[in-house]
Amino acid sequence: MTLRALFAGFAVSALTFACFAQAPPKKGNPLVKKQAYGHMPDGAAVDLYTLTNATGMEIHIITYGGIVTSLMAPDRAGKMADVVLGMDTLEGYLGETQHFGALIGRYGNRIGNGQFHLDGHLFTLPKNDGENTLHGGPGGFDRCLWKGAETPNADGPSVLLTYVSKDGEMGFPGTLTAKVIYTLTKKNELRIDYTATTDKDTVVNLTNHSYFNLAGAGEGDILQHQLTINADRFTPVNAGLIPNGELKAVLGTPFDFNKATAIGARIDDPDQQLKYGHGYDHNYVINKSMGGLTKCVEVFEPKSGRVLEVSTTEPGVQFYTGNFLDGTIHGKGGKVYAYRGALCLETQHFPDSPNKPSFPSTELKPGQTYHTRTVYRFSAR
Image 1 (cartoon, rainbow, N blue to C red):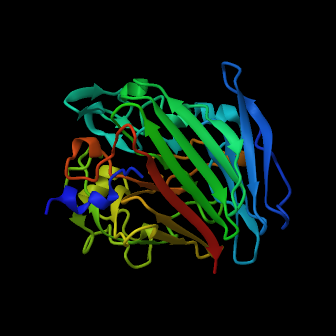
Image 2: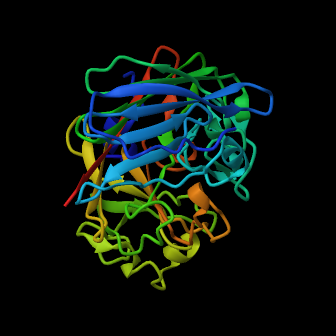
């Protein structure tokens, strides 16, 4: 059986103003609040949506980049803290290059040499990561203004974001209509539903690039966070962080997180893959359950007791340990974002899939609907 057949079930199917300072949220009725956030350089308005659930958990999302600018989660004593990195102003987001909290597309992660073949045609993309294209290129979805609207949802307050990517934008074929629904459920879950349709054959791989520190944004590094990843294999990379096509067993390597392990326990081991990534910056092949969501990650922060569980319909998750944070970025409240001061868990199809026929397909055709779901659930113990 080929790897492509093995993964057939995972293929894309038919299926500015300062951040608003507020008092700690009170328990009450779920709601969605819309406010002005600032203006783009061309004068276009950027809106802020605040989602609050009945337990008092609160999430802020802006229409520029679909960015999650704040996520207030309780610790074991019920004390709220903002657990995602970000900036205080729209201008801060316009200037930063770390993709804090943003929606990523048209293709999350890397495409080798900035090109791929589809239907016998070569498509060339702008390179923004050495010789590669990263996160859709320099004008990816994280740099676009999305259209926002509150949307009814029985599970909790929701906002729908829509963006239409024109044929040829960043070199990708087809006009792609992307829709993303952020929902804050009564179970303290941030649920993200991604859908997309196209008028030409294309490739698509959408994700969110939130940086998490469960002790609180800017509260030191994440090396003592306890991590579990439900994956027996990962996709090793070359020096440019492009997968070599192998699915390598994690057993006996620093990449084995099948049992809860401190992130910092082996991050500086003399392993070539860790050297390439300057730490962890690798895609894990999730041990998928049959149908629906699969829990792929759990993170526990010992001091606060906060727990983050990630479930997804996607076949992979990119685990990144903030290796390119260098202490020069001053984020919300002027806090310094230190080296390895956050972790990212980007649910996805595999990097460079358009150039790896053995990987799960990321192709989307007219008449098909791309749909994936990822759930970030917050609790404490």
